[in-house]
Image 1 (cartoon, one colour):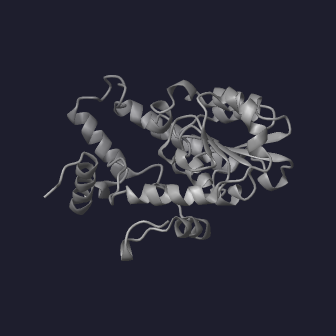
Image 2 (cartoon, rainbow, N blue to C red):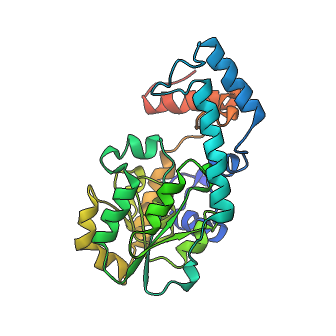
Length: 291
């Protein structure tokens, strides 16, 4: 049943139908996707910060590059991005026959894989483990994250393409176009599993996630568990739509307004109105009234 009253009434069926119809991308995705690889303003700010911290050629730390390291990183990313856009040979998902499983690559280093999935954060090894666990007639389709093209080395993708029955497709292929073709989505903790769950497509995460209450989203602590469950997920799996409606009503009912991401990437997080929304949300979470 919908929850709330009047204008606040939440209908899970309407939420799921609207998502499938509108195919929205996350707010942060569109903002980050418009950013240039070489941004003079960001480079200047990074240089000033490192001069202030005296991190010119003092060596990289766990959280910061010195000036020399930052220049090398930017140059390497520009070269790798050119390779990915212009030189890399991709497979065409439309020409792949048989069952398809989809693994979208995570950005690294990043909380979503290095903190939430520290035992599966070697993505080349993870892809090999997934491939071993999938049925022989299933192709594993891999796609790079379009927002951070060039972060991974050229060697990473050359090694990836050597893995049998793994196909690398272009980074700019729409995930929603892929969802129409794939039979299973796999990720450590990515948004792709959430989107697949909202569409009723079987999805597996290797970290427990808040959207795991959707009927088609499953958590496996290790890729080897796929061997037992993949045949059922790949062949005629049916979602529990009513259960998904109830889950979405509960999820939205407990949600609060506000926008959160890394302020270095999007300074709108620090807008006073947004700070006020975030403070109200955290106060509600902690059981405190904010006056």
